[in-house]
Image 1 (cartoon, one colour):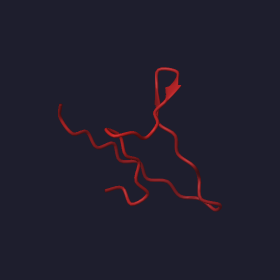
Image 2: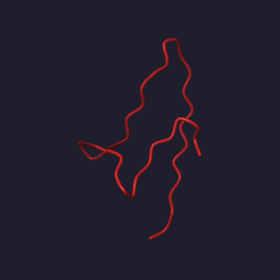
Image 3: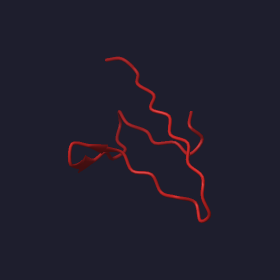
Image 4: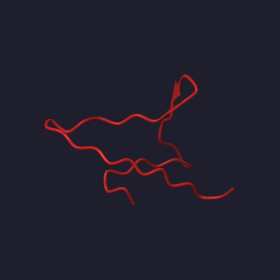
Length: 40
């Protein structure tokens, strides 16, 4: 498959948490999915 990058910029104090949701399911990290604080 192809690589997809979904950028998300957040700001706040305290630092907000970010969740990705597909349908009604929270997307979790695995061998194919990485969620990075750096955005890279």
